[in-house]
Image (tube, rainbow, N blue to C red; front, side, top):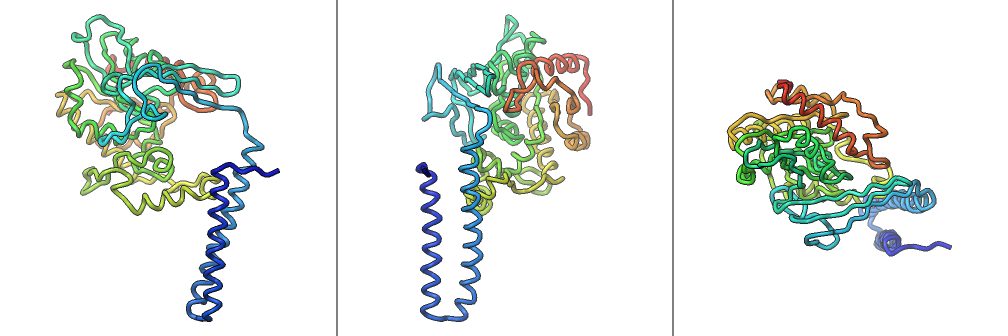
Length: 378
């Protein structure tokens, strides 16, 4: 017995409506026997009808094959322990960076993958920053450590005391950590925050450093590829180069309307979703260069606002080596851990791929030692 959900029923109705319209147009063409019109309309209708049949095939294949071959059970359950909730989300819109965590919130997450289970607690302060535990005594007398990046900076699937910033501050108790990372962020969020000019006022300590954790997918997020746009990033900041200078033009929806419309249309394609097709199909030199120029822009703004040049890029394990060349040309200090090998069984969340507390601990230990030793390269 074939049972369709409401979403499946809607999809069937969409297909049925299209073929009904095709039939109606064909009847009109046949009735008036307009050869010029029929010579154009009929081939177009046949082409579109064939495409819709392909879409129907992949709709059925994707829906019912997945239902019968579900794989290992995986789930993520969130519960808010403290603070407000916007619907069922723990994020909120932000005009500067697209979105951020709801401030003053404590969230419990239970992640399961087969027999694996991890319970994590996420806490945010009044400025939506992930709370980083302080291991010293007097925060006013210490140095700040700013952390920028995505989920591997924020610390998805680990608790507040298990993030990379937390371990850095544990190994160097003279530091007060401020975690500005967030799941799904690219390079442009860091640049947008510094362009806004509010960060210096949020940090009471006078001296310190900033670290940006780079991974290759940040390039995809900077250009707003189709995957990023359709999954979560439609409201993220949109930057382009104007005479070698990064310029912001709204977000990925308002700043490039026709591209946004195309991506939204393709999002509905079962063929595109089945094969996980993406646009652009590969990253080019100009995409990496735009990302590097956004890093440079953030570096320049950081120096101006914080009155020091203690800005570093951390090339995380597994990231590409292409960015290293651009950082050298732009004279930006970096620590290259791209070839660093960390035990995959201990250092990777099963079924997901994000780093574990073991990974962050191992990375932070090396990072603190090399930073103290003045190891960052130019």
